[in-house]
Image (tube, rainbow, N blue to C red):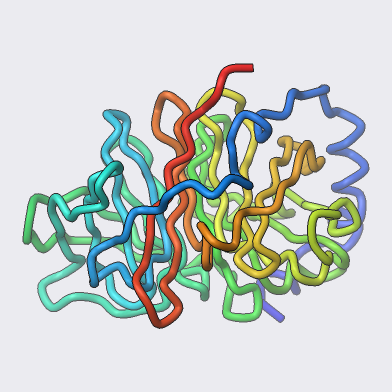
Length: 284
């Protein structure tokens, strides 16, 4: 159990779902506009990304990726999967269980499963960049697996695969990290109720990443275990859910969107080669 969870008022946690849903506004689902169940052709990623763990897109449509062991960032070609450039954190490199990446303006963030946030600027090819580390209060018990930037609150959302927090059961939680105050906010910003998950067994819905849709404003959450993708509203309501083709997405670990809406998912190779899958946004 994390120290953060022990500080969270039980009454506030218990009332969060009811409060959020009472203020919810009907929202359209966009997941059906992506052929996520189709046998599209994935692109094989270079060897350094055999254990691809996270993706983020820049405002001009470039894609940054990372693996889950090293603080090394790779810009990859979103069509061919080739490495365009790479840069690392610090003079001697950083190792850790890196699980998600997000971007806000010129700042880039990596998060570990223990909730440690690394902040830095994008570097040039082979460059070593300086960084800052923030301890959020989340820990290994929370098992942070996803990260995305939410401009609505100027915050990062840290999605927990594990313990959602004291007093919370039957949900997956995402906490907001305030980028101005540089601290984690309580209670959780987003709660996904497992009883709303029907595309797989609720116990198998263990999120591996989260991304904000650039047009719809909804959140897309992938789960490697269970092989599915779920679209949720800002109040946590599940709007749509689909199975991912197991043939195409062997072990989905990262998700992002290009500015025009194309969805990208990266897969850990699980002992083989990592891959990148493109899903263009279809019209209605």
